[in-house]
Image (cartoon, rainbow, N blue to C red; front, side, top):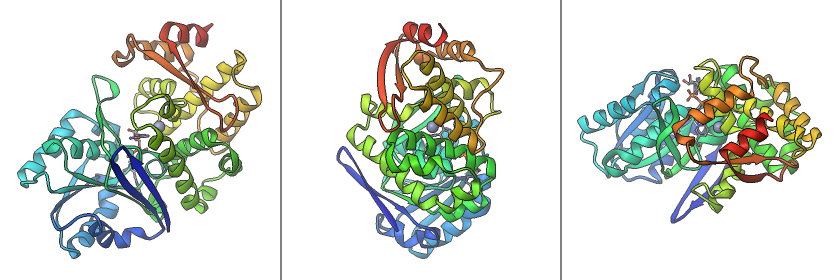
Length: 354
Ligand code: NAD
Ligand code: ZN
């Protein structure tokens, strides 16, 4: 079993990674929580596949368990869905001593995580990520959020779980498009980490190769993210590196109106940024080319023909969240050596469009 210790401020928790872990959820959760009420929150797809198994496991070790479900998809990261889940907890008389298990992809982790952060000002949380994206990225780092007023992640909180349980075996049911989309975050993290990790990821060309390497890739991606987050939980310049490709990527994701998965949009964002900055001489052409080849090689989109840089910049400018703020431009002069440059929005616009 891979074990990664995450230590943020005064909190400390483990990420456990092993094939077949789902069959031991009861005993593992019981190492963290005394008997209490537990809500297992999943989207309908994941609920149909895994919720019952997890609920049974938890009941066997003495928890009083409630299954909560919501429709799959980004649209569920909403204030109304947050309110409805909280209302269901209230109806079941949950108190602040009870707990939430977020069983699902990044949408479930973000939504159920924010429910846990806010219900009665905070109940305990355990993350069981089931999508590739969640197993390599979103389940660690404590960010939770819903979207509001067409702005992604506008309302959220930093909220760390007590435990993260990663079972790569559940990826067997994940649709291939989701596997590939999640892999964009692996490529992002490996590019930031450099060294062996980048060498390994650079060679991956097929979904079958991803599936052969899940435990190792998940452990490496999470260990790198944990190291960055431990140094800086709340987005000082250190943590900003994790947003590589994300400012443009979020614009692409919004403009695509549900046609692109998060990872696909981030892939387009990383490539658009690297290619532009390579024209400006900030990023060597070889780095931009290697990154593009690796993303395209696994089947990720690297351009969105109808979404050129001016449209992305307009979208960034129109987000209320970005008004008046500086942009932190994250770029890669070399693999393993990310740089963050805070620039005024107008300056970034000029550089990216010039
Ligand atoms: P998702 O949660 O919608 O999952 C993708 C799809 O896969 C869904 O239809 C889901 O039902 C299905 N699914 C998940 N696991 C499955 C399994 N084992 N078998 C079959 N189907 C399964 O989306 P995602 O790509 O996991 O996450 C994207 C979200 O994560 C975005 O909202 C993004 O903003 C967020 N995110 C958050 C962070 C963070 O640090 N909090 C980081 C990156 C991304
Ligand atoms: Zn992301």
